Amino acid sequence: MKFKLRLLFGALVGFVTYLLTIGVIRWLPAKQPIEGAILGVYRYSDFISAFLVVVVVVLFQIRQKRKEKK
Image (tube, rainbow, N blue to C red):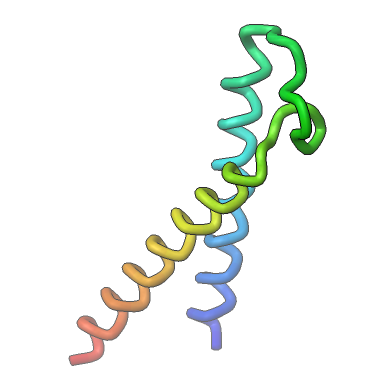
């Protein structure tokens, strides 16, 4: 159970970090807000790509944990 909780917390931190990085990269050039974007910065594809990155990392960690048990 401890592993799953730590994995969930790591996934949440990774998701937020990815979105903050994208937000800062788009905010620094001081461009006009993106039309139809959430908060003028995030597109829906940003959330999808952040989710996919987190899924890949979590699956990799689960795979590594299973290898350690063998």
